[in-house]
Amino acid sequence: MRILVVEDEAKTGDYLKQGLSEAGFVTDLVRDGLDGLHLGLSGDYDLMILDVMLPGMDGWTLLQAIRRNDKATPVLFLTARDQIEDRVRGLEAGADDYLVKPFAFAELLARVRTLLRRGKTRKPDTLQVADLELDLRRRRASRGGQRIDLTAKEFALLELLLRRRGEVLPRSLIASQVWDMNFDSDTNVIEVAVRRLRAKVDDGFEPKLIRTVRGMGYVLDESGH
Image (tube, rainbow, N blue to C red; front, side, top):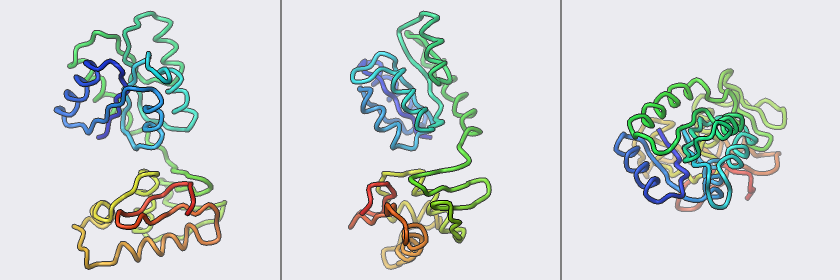
């Protein structure tokens, strides 16, 4: 489970990162609203913990931008403000829960776990980038309204690339996630699969979405080649 903490107060941020990491969560910490927005949109997080008062961009604006981009990631607002109006404003902006500082870490952890359990049922049914759409429920892919026929492995590979869009995925990670195997540098199964997937997804379409990053792996984004 991956959690993004956006908190500019150094002590609180470090405390949260350490506590959540010790509780078994992969935790990223940023201290600026703009950095939080960038990671919130590009990363595949299971939960975001947002402070309201942040440099660069406040938590309300950050959350509205996240929701405008159809990100359904559960969000817990964390703030020193205890006015009822602030709580209402946070919830109206799309927050899932609200915790006022100072807080007991045990309570925060309980709320985090509740939101994560609830979040599992909120995973989107479709993943989309540019005009490429993946229907997870019906296991269908289409681009520009045209159906793309994929094998089970190609579908799993495309789903992984879409979920981690903008992130360079090494061959070893793809091998373990899609083929459930340890990566053997002598095998070209991944190269072949990516080549076939790219032919189906990118040939005849613009922009090109799947790129090879030499010596590192593969990435799916809208920047083209």
